Length: 232
Image (cartoon, rainbow, N blue to C red; front, side, top):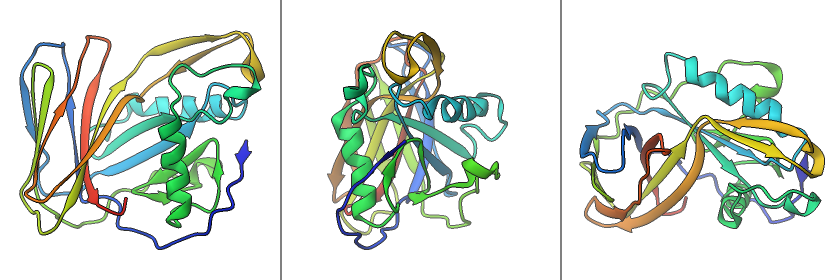
């Protein structure tokens, strides 16, 4: 499905600086992980339970659960948008800010239009899904180490190559989530979701240190963090 947006395209920004993943085993465990200097590939899927074209894309991204590159080279994120809710089914994972994030990609020239299912790889529109291409791997840049530590309901992020004001992004992901859709284009279907963005935060810093309040429960599978310029 396509949702048009007539905003003018702007410049393309450098999307990722670095990325890592922290697996969450419970809501009270303390964990710490370092990314190393290599970049990972950030895969963003924009989807909706109210879109009849989206379940195949949801199944496609779910296959990454068995991919040996998962968490090591590829971090998949599934953002549920809200602009199809009017069709009769309100996607419980959808948020206006996820739709705005996709539109911001359009404004910055990262995608040609706003639609679902829409996929970006490292901040650039990628249509390889539609022709069964392999997900591209990140370039060979070594931007620096990113450290993510989790202590109870607080996450701290440190980046050791901070040369300007940067933005840290933090997401909490859920996998193995089942939804029984009763209305709309997917009425009477059971949808299975993986890598669903359940919480998303971002904050600026001039010294390479960030702190986020994160409430975790056992249903949450992972916390992921990445760094970008202030323009993204």
